Each structure stands twice: as structure tokens, then as C-alpha cells.
Image (cartoon, rainbow, N blue to C red; front, side, top):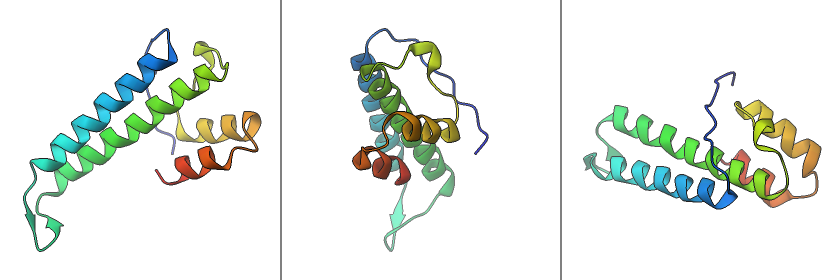
Length: 104
């Protein structure tokens, strides 16, 4: 889990949400192009690409959430482990957020 994720430089939390939706729509568009046979995708590469894009959409949405909750932009994280630590430290009682992140 040591991958580094580049943070976007938006001013408002709403901009992060808009960007996350854009990423998610791109991921869906990528999956729509892949042929399905017997309920299975036939080409693994675009499926992996779509999953990575959807993962980045979730992290971008979390950045918007953290900014809305008062975390400074320069304190935003660049790894999934860092997101867990931030949630544990600041949002201990919010089970919905933790469960949403663990589903990623």
C-alpha cells in the first residue's frame, strides 16, 4: 500500500467532489467499451484501468470530505495508509466513512 497519490489543488471541497464524479464516469465509460461474454469481461487491461480510476475517484472524494471537515489542504494524504490513520485520528465514531473506505 505504499503507492503515492498526487493531490489535486482545488480550493473548495465541492470541486473535489466534481472531479471524483468525473473520474467515476471515466471508469464507467472504460468498462462499457469492454466486451462481456458469459457474464465476464473479456479484456482484463481496461478492467484494471477502470478499477484504478474508480479508486482515485474515491480518494478524491475523501479529500473533499476532509477539507469540508476542516483538514488543511497541505495536510491531505498521498497514500491509503495515511487515509486510514487520518480517519482513525479524526473521525473515530463515523462508521459509515470507515466502511465506505474499506469497501474500496
